[in-house]
Length: 167
Image 1 (cartoon, rainbow, N blue to C red):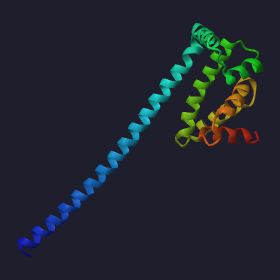
Image 2 (image 1 turned 45 degrees about the vertical axis):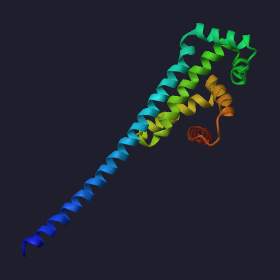
Image 3 (image 1 turned 180 degrees about the vertical axis):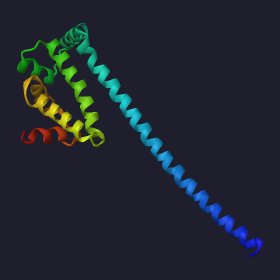
Image 4 (image 1 turned 30 degrees about the horizontal axis):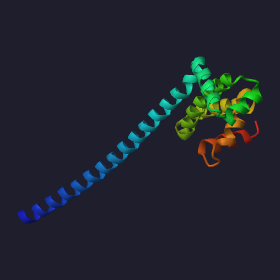
């Protein structure tokens, strides 16, 4: 074997190493992009939950929202349904609906990554969801909320399927 043959073999091995490195780098970039998008989505969901909870935590803010809504003659059919169905004041309906919406966004995020739960965690999550959305004031909220949510929302479909299952 001469030095030219050894050099050619070295070049082939080097080229294969470069291709393998580029493939690995492409996988790492893809993974980093996926994780970054997940982090952004999680931050957005957390921020939204905090914004939704603010009127639930602060009755004065809920009262202010009612006053402002009345001043411009605005109505909110969703909250009006809660007011009449549950016997709440407008301010109470705002606080209750915002509290429930914050829980919904938490649950929707959990549903989006349901495969990451253990069987026991998923059974507990499903049992809690079924219990909340099938009876009590939460079921009234779900019925009102369900009317305004898209039927092709994966989280809504998950809950609908869960509630349709026999206990």
